[in-house]
Length: 65
Image (cartoon, rainbow, N blue to C red; front, top):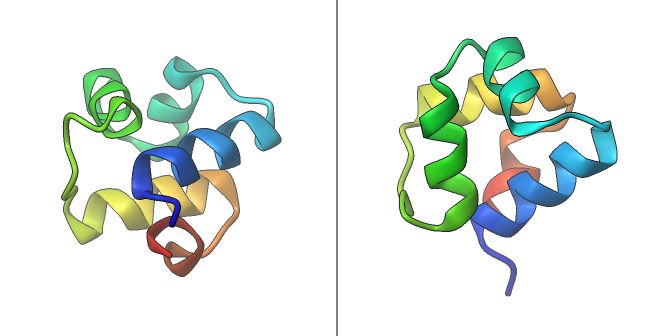
């Protein structure tokens, strides 16, 4: 089962974005993206997930499932 970290990383790479660019487009801190992708932050807030999903043009469902 894929986790949030893997799903965000895959979607980000598919979108051709760097972690920095994703952070800027989602309006979240760069460190937040790094921590989510590294698995350090296993439970990001729903607001953060919504922002990241919107920036990646995917649904929140695709990130969490």
